[in-house]
Length: 318
Image (cartoon, rainbow, N blue to C red; front, side, top):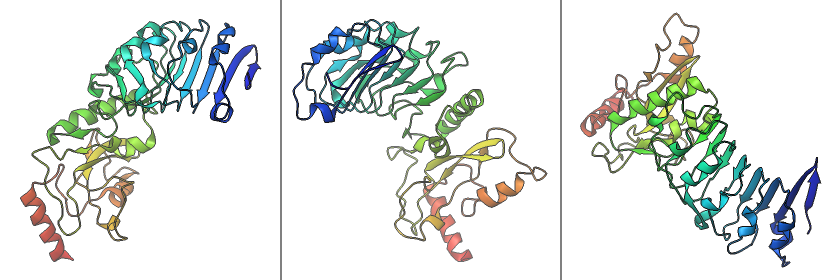
């Protein structure tokens, strides 16, 4: 079989689209490699179920990504007792199963990437006691849970974390009540104090793309003078200080015209520590970068009537 590599005593078989696109191979041939340690299959046109892929007792790395027509369930991993690195990214709806099936690999797993597999379910906290788990990416799955449930002894080795919007506090989560936000921000604050690099800078700065849900009774139509109400969230840093605030846009939102970005307005910062003061070397940064205008004095979104009145006041000042 082509693309069979032996590197530093480890056998690695790579099966990619360039090999299989116009050629028929008997995939069962890899069963001859009983001492296989690493298996990578990327963007392959393989179609159906392949139990042979999960029958390597010495396998430590399984990279099966972009194989949308390969049908398998997480419980098929139960025989890979030495598995450390699992990458199932971009496998779509044919990758199924409950996250709890990975508990048989509790003592070995170090990296789990199951991004863009919408039929993966379960609770991410089922992996909280994995002693060696360093990287966990469950984005765009149907995993449930609540980020506030992560305790100080959970995920003891975790270095990076990315959760889907189906988790309370995951990327893209929408709040049904403004009053729920402080407890989530406090949870994030405690997590980054424990592990500063746990979340990507992009997601942290944009507060994981959190915003108020349109289903909330606190949400209202926002077509007033081109400025949306501050229904989105962002995290704020001034030196070593950390806080958050409501804002009218996320940092990477598309703007309809050149002036719309200038109209972006935010509420006052809710600091999760003492915050910068006038004697701090970072106070000037706070004044320049964080000072608000229209929503001055507001630490949460104004009501619809308040918002309308604030815009009228803003027009008169201009």
